[in-house]
Length: 217
Image (cartoon, rainbow, N blue to C red; front, top):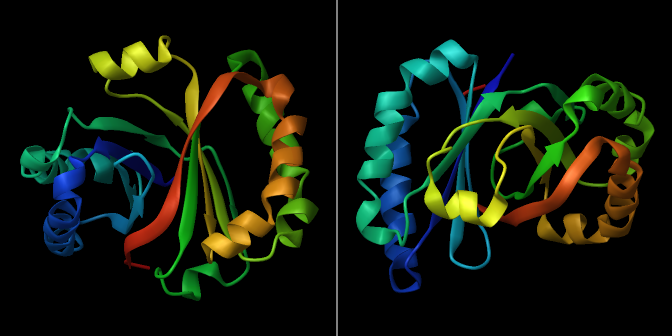
């Protein structure tokens, strides 16, 4: 199964443009990493930037971990706290027809970090499987990826914000544009309400336009 590494960073507002320029250069050189499927960078509100790397599998991600750490370490002068790295194997996905043939840019993504009830996880995946008609009805929807996550358990600020880091997942929803994401908001909110029995705690949402995109497929 594909494996995803999300890196969430808080950038000094005065250095954000310089950081994004620096990051683009770093990621351009990262594109040749063996086993890498793709890279996306979301410019989120509140000085946040989310870098997402998708690998063929966990083995490929592990092999690239030192190289990825070098990219993070090289960006430290632009950041206001240590990066949060949360990663895991994709447990469920929806891909719209022909999505792999579309260019990575432009695009828009919403990353939703939320807790789940582990006793209901398989039931949740079955429920997601049953909702294809809803996904197909959302114009501009590219993909949905559900990834149980771990990592950064020793990150003090993350623990203060969330508390219990166990049994959490990131749901990544990609669209062709921000406009289409906004147009689908009511339908998406109703869908999330129908998921309530499977979820725990309040979601943390990071969303924004892609400012970098690359695909190796």
